[in-house]
Image 1 (tube, rainbow, N blue to C red):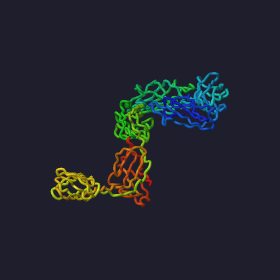
Image 2 (image 1 turned 60 degrees about the vertical axis):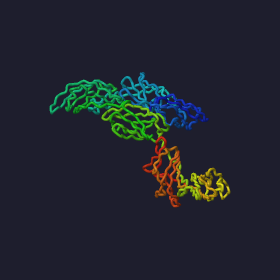
Image 3 (image 1 turned 90 degrees about the horizontal axis):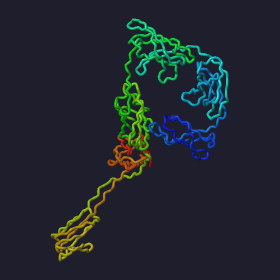
Image 4 (image 1 turned 135 degrees about the horizontal axis):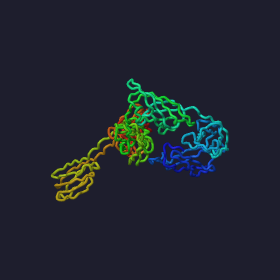
Length: 591
């Protein structure tokens, strides 16, 4: 199992055996970049697919593997019980030869003429291989007995011990420089010699002539160390540092030099052949090697959960600062990066990269200071309460009503009073009228009673004052006069007619923010845009979006098909600030 980046621990791995039981897998071989898993052969069926499940695997920044747990399928092969064999033995150098097997094997031992040799897989950093490189301590020459033992195939089946006389040829050809030139590395200049075979490091002698301002002068012999470049594994390249070699570094001088050595040799111990090198010397300015460190970087959230800003203390190199692979959030590379100024990069995350609101690490690497030749090391910044960036979607769109009614205002209740004499009749709150009525009232001869002439009910008059109720409205009488007659008319209040609009209901995948622009969405019948209601055309409640139309949808419009589309002013978002994911082509409305 090979991981995409180094991890801290191999995690815990299990698999399901042939009986359906969960079994812990053997994960003994682990090197931070990969883990080797094995199963109990008695608990699986050859040729079947086994699913391994791994948990608690995190990188250096504590980002858990995604998904967690992770599942990987493997087909179980039969155990290889056939012993490996040697296909060939080939000399590749003065002290090296290769042994190639018919299949991939693990290393054993090799002796040449009874002397142990060093054995290593040909593939760099491998532990098993089909071809192994054998390095001897002395130069290979003449027939030698080669014995090979202890090599095994990947299932542990050993190879039979092997012995053979191999005729080796001593390499008597001197190493030759295929290329010689002056190079600049980290602000320093070197003569670089590239040979046709591996050579040793050692002292070299340099001499020749230079031409400056048309004047030719000889260059006295200079002795210098020739060394491998940093991280070089080929052993075919040597560098001669020109620092402090004043006779070889005259500004604008043309050099014609010869480099020779008895110390630089092939692995067959043959000294290098002399080589020519010509160059015009130019001084180089000291390289800018500034790098960003932790204190030079700030990471901040924005109103949009899918964007972050990274602010650097100095202007950045644009090419490295806009490379998405140089930023990781939650262990994943971001979708894209753009510069909003010379110091600020805006990161756009992949949709759903943050599935749960919380604290996440943002790792920045390989970004250069503007003008610098050196990339920064990884800097990790925690960002607290980063909101999830899973965009809400429209799950359904339905024409839920096609009723259309124009609303009207109701009429206020009325009370008309006609009276004779000096009686004053004052109505109460007219809005309380519940029935329409027209009734006459008569004050008794003694002035002590008021009679309702419709139903003969009476109310008492005290000092000319009385109260009675008609149609749900209370009236007050003052200064009632004996034998007086008066009439009271009440009219009940009429209720307003409630307007109705055809509605389309959209159900979202989650709760939405109630704030919405009234032109955030448009409705089309085929290619014809339909008018929305003049007020409260779009209303959001929890996960429901209600759209009101200005008129009923016709049969022809229904046949053309209804579609809801977003507009440029669409501001519908979830509570975390993620914009509603609705295609520009819209969503079809069911009916």
